Amino acid sequence: MTDTVLVTGTSTGIGLATAIAAAKAGWRVVATMRDTARSSALLEAAATAGVTDLIDVRALDVTDAEAAAACVDEVVRDHGRLDAVINNAGAGHLGTLEQESIDEVRAVFEVNFFGMLNVTKPALPHLRASGGRLLAVTSVGGVVGQPFSESYCAAKFAVEGYLESLAPVVGAHGVRVTVVEPGAVASEFVTNVGFDPAQVDAAGPYAPQLRNVLNHIGDAFSSAQSSEDAAAAIVDTLTADKPAFRVQTSEVARTFNATKLADMDGSAVQAMTTEWVS
Image 1 (cartoon, rainbow, N blue to C red):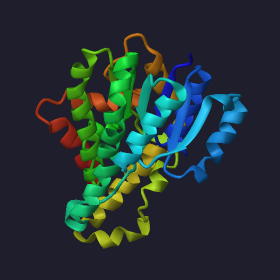
Image 2: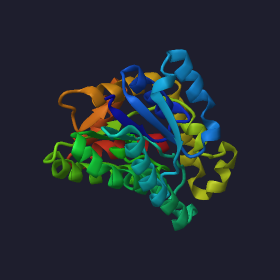
Image 3: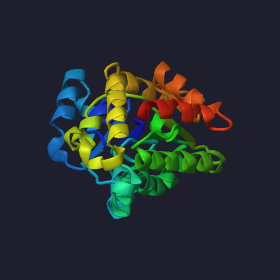
Image 4: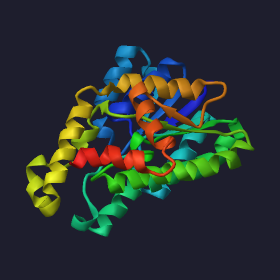
């Protein structure tokens, strides 16, 4: 029987590329997205790759816990098993605490953190049964806190902390856990943040710092990794005999995260990110 992987957030970007790459590697891919009316790009890519018969598109809003549980149950009912979950669905966010509501911060967590939990919780019994894999696409922003991305980074930090803590617990039952950390990836991710650079002046006293950070982001994305390259690293991890807990999808991401992981007193990260706002 073909192994089955559920991938969230597959309408664009890394999720779409991962669904195609996993199908090309021989997996039955349950490709979920909030609105299946946006599935045309995925289905066209599947047809081009000759893997249409391995792609099963389903609607899922990961912020809806009941829908997530129902989706997992239906996957197991229809395909007989669940061997892996790739929690990819997420959304970027730019803003700073003084100028946004706490409800806006909570909304970032609902998608990026609680959405992962909503899918993972009902999946775990099935992953224990199959000795399966649990992956979450986080970000270098899940390791290094970045100016004006406080809420997004905090949510991704939460994902990494939660799964780092969970990994040995479920690992005792044969479930391998990995967090995958891309850096800048050429996709619709930045566009979907929904921030209008023309509104920089609305940042008041923080406007100069925000303008500098936006310039830094533009520079980073001018040499971004492709979604396909990031997806290749994800599928390599999915199929590895002994996957690492923490995986970066590019050398840029590895170098960037190494700054934090070797930064015992926090001074190296603060020096780096202070340059971005100066």
